[in-house]
Image (tube, rainbow, N blue to C red; front, side):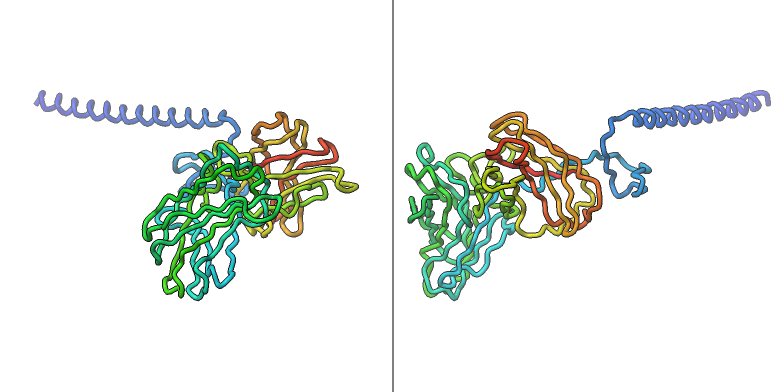
Length: 380
């Protein structure tokens, strides 16, 4: 009987001890949680985004955490790497041309019309780009190409200079086997110091065109560097402002580029004396964006400028309202420099932005110069 009473007491004591351990464990975990929350109060004032599983108050930005915290990230908006390409319909040459995802590659799809009468069709870079030096040691131009439909088609590269006249170089590829990716190499010999336009002539086509033939063109390489990544169309940038001296030409150029976006950049040249009252030179996308930027809070880009103290800013237009960032100043000439701005506050329909306008202020800085713009990114 005594043993039973002692055993019963031991069970009771054991239960009390286990209960005490549970309570202590909860207290320790609660202290740890409180410590984490206390530490979080002193984190830097960085914007954080949470997964959709989190509850939040959108108006105040206050979050009730139910999952891990994810720091906001920069998103590449335009790498400024792709030229605008034109499909010519001479002789019913091209039926469609689109940027597509094909065989796990973002590339340019060019479909040849079956009603064409010629054994060739043509695509070309648009208006002249800023002249590029393709002389020695540049010795090749390359492309990665996939052809469906017709076997043994060819592509001829025709190169034109900014000084006018006919082509300054024309090289035809070997026959291209169908249904496989083929690396095409056009050998170049001291072409020109003023290359400003190229044509890609799709030729050796069977006539009548009984085959539905499509060319997929990816990654153009000049010498050893990517000249056009062909993965999308940059925003078809155009020039504006009275101080622009390179108007009516394509803005994308291969003359300068960042290491993270090696194919090209936007080129802008200005001269404040071109007409009285010049105050700015800018670039802007020709087509309205019609994009929702309501979740973004910052913008940044890389700039390469010929002159220090050059004032730059970015303007925004929603069709009715215009806002601009603060003005910043270039601190290093002929060097890539990153500039970052908060998106400006004020009356603006950020859910339907139409234009973005990187610009140089020409009435308070150097009166002449040139600037390259690359890697435009947005932060949310």
